[in-house]
Length: 164
Image (tube, rainbow, N blue to C red):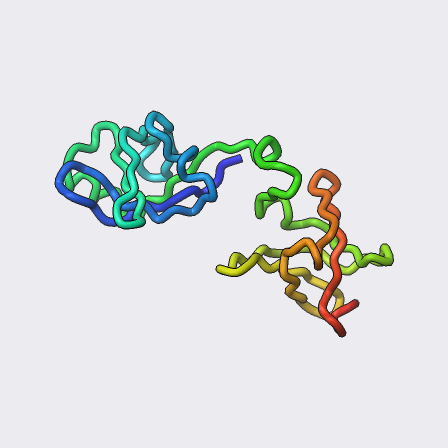
C-alpha cells in the first residue's frame, strides 16, 4: 500500500539537504540511507543522507547537490510502498486498517463504523459513525479492548449516554 511518510520542507545549508516534516512512526526505516521514496511530481528519490539537527530530520537525495535544487522540491509529499499487514505487533495498527471496522458493544450489539482516527498528542481518538451521530472514543485498551483488523471488527466501551 502506498503511504504518505513525509513532506519536504525548506532547504538546509548549501549542499542540498532538506528539512523533512515526518508523517510516519518509523522514520529511521522509511528514510534510511539507500531507501527510495516516491513523489507525484518528481518521480522516485533515493536517500543519500539521514541526520537529525536540533530535533529536525534532514535528508539528502541522490543527484540533489545544492540549495536551489532542493528548494524546487519544497512541499513535495514523500510516499513509500508498505505492507501494513506485515508490520507491527498485536497492538500496532495502521489508520487504514481501522477505518471501516465495525464497532460492537460488549453485549455484541452493533454500535457503528469507524470513519476516522484522529491523532492527538496524548492519544488517538476513534471517530465512529452511529445511527445517532458521530461518537469519539479514545483509542485505549480500557475503552477498545478487542481489535480484530483481519475481520474488520472491534469491541468498544462508549462514553456514558453515547450508546446507540
